[in-house]
Length: 483
Image (cartoon, rainbow, N blue to C red; front, side, top):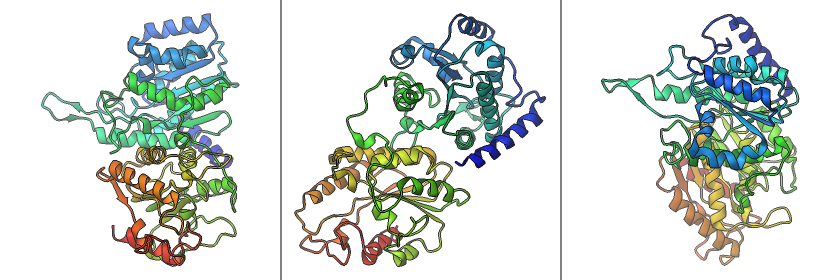
């Protein structure tokens, strides 16, 4: 997001805060939390007695780290960082503001602050006053403003509100409130809160994918009540947050980097005929206000097909097939030449898909993971499949309503006995087994349509043995249209 856009958003939110400041019940009107007086006093005494390097601010999800069953996670990731738990069960943005204004920041200048708040603001089953996503963003903005004033040297990490699908029942068995509305409100609130990040002092992190099953539902093994992470969910959260938190605090990571580099998000790895970072910025600009019906995610095969944005000087290699496949639909091309799964993960973690809710998402990634260079080793089919799983879960987390078309990786090299052909076949078999029957995902393998009976790859379909020609892209277009 541009500096200008951040400034405009901040002014808008600050204006809304100023108008609502004197209105009890608003998300920015500080009020003490009933029943938490003793906890607040204890926290103020702790704050006065010691300086902390990490403040963890939030509601019951953060508060839970003080329970015995969560101790192992706290001791591994947060205790060594001289952290304090400022989570309050049932807390809302207005309660957090009151706590911070009344002693919980006194004399503190931590290296980092984590903030996870807002799910109780949208809770229409347990609170008489329910806030809109825009109001939640106003509340978070007010907290960020206060933190910047009181702790100007601290880095602030905003966490997207975790997914919740729990249902509350009335005595007669009917639903109290609406789980669907709470989920949707939190999803939208997270998209608005993300815009508060400036990448300099305030950062945004979405780890919600770690709580999902392949079908996109919340995994009860990680969040038993479909709201609060259990110990296993808290561990998954801590691991997902660790690279960012370690970077903000400037310390040694408390969890080793996964051996499978295909699941470790990373920016540009290889040089190509275009500016990787400029394309990333172009996409962030292009997606604003576009509301695409189709989004394609992939590498150069997707990048070169057509659509917007195209890199300067680049010429679409399948414009006729593109027009036929998407026939006037608003379409966004998130293909990047030379990308591997880890590059896609970085791009998804840095805003390229945030706020988008297309009808279809077409994912075609993984072929470059089989090419090792000095910048990244080659992966096994199982490793690539794991990387693709992480891509899909991120998409499902950010846009639960989107239908996903997972492409089988296209064949490469002219010869049927090419070593890469075997790796691609193994990967596609894994993808079919893992995703072939998952609701909301269609696995589409067009590999056989590119090959001659003897298994060779015709140059008229892929002139360089990797990238489709217009005729090759026509095969992809036909496959999509048949859906």
